[in-house]
Length: 536
Image (cartoon, rainbow, N blue to C red):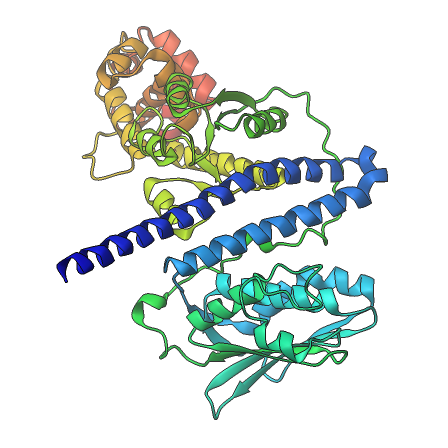
């Protein structure tokens, strides 16, 4: 009996190990798919934006459309894997359902227009609210509409109806089309994984509808289908009203964000934009690209190099050394580097006073919400999943650099003159506070400068210069002069000491040099400034 029990346990452990290996295989292979997909999609979008490629627009659009289709298939496989391993969790919040559906419909409007298909939404209550997970319901509706458009001929119709059933306490979302319809046998199996009925053999994977059924069941709802050959198809999604059917872990209370699935965005509605001519102006910012996939690294460096100075690193160690040595204005990094997890370098960079101010964008094949949450906690500034649009990457880099400029102006605006106690702060603010306190403490010492600050703060001259330039926009000496002049202005207002004494108090060796510096900065000499204040 004992031997039999041990045998069962051993078989169970082997089965569990095999299951884990299967899940790991799906995870790894999906990431492998995303790299070539990135290298297909990104250059294709660049070509579509190039007026010289206009003769090939149709072919390029076909490539882009099918790469997007392949990406959706990869993501569906990943979602099914998560469902099987119980790692997909619903996060429901209350949303306006009609605007949500109309946003998804907008991706199909151009296709409907081109095919002469009547495409509309019908409801009696446009203010209807419903508790659901928007990322999940987005996938469901996208699948249902994709199927409807596949099998609906020109001049047909696809109608979305939203109804509230008070008796059953449900909201029904119906997708009705006048397409080819399905046989009775197909209807029985349509929600089975990898099932391909008569009409699906050439254009369906058998994944989308199976995934949709599982996602609706996570909402504690269900999905039904009615169809007859030649008479169209109707899918009905039944979702319960209110939130009583969800447990506490399935609900997001209070403020919530409207999520969307990046892979579900349709690019069919975007016309190619005019090509931006590369500017001859000097490149102001430096970007460090850390990526071990050489084709992607080369592509990113080439494209970003049109706008920024580029430093590149093929592994974490090199990337960390270059970040500490050259202190770039922004870093892009892949989380799945061969040596170790990219989160390791993020943690080091965000906790080191020399680099804590640098915005970090993660560009990765990892698209799970768990990775995003972990990244946010570590201080990642933005998160982009592969395959990506280069235009999206570029705009996010520009946005982060602009925000850094606003933060710099904020620091400059409220720089302390008097030393104040430092409470628990971000590393950047702590650095600024320490630096300004050190300058204030030594303000009367005319010999105080870069060497003394480097010694006190444990930074090299280059690191100190780049850190201060990034946060405050000044060189060390310019900033020290700014603080000295600000202090002098304060003393001229509050004390009756001779101007020569005030000049020495703030570290100027001669009153003549002080007067010249004061006038260059404020547009008025110290004596004229004091006279004006007395007149007022």
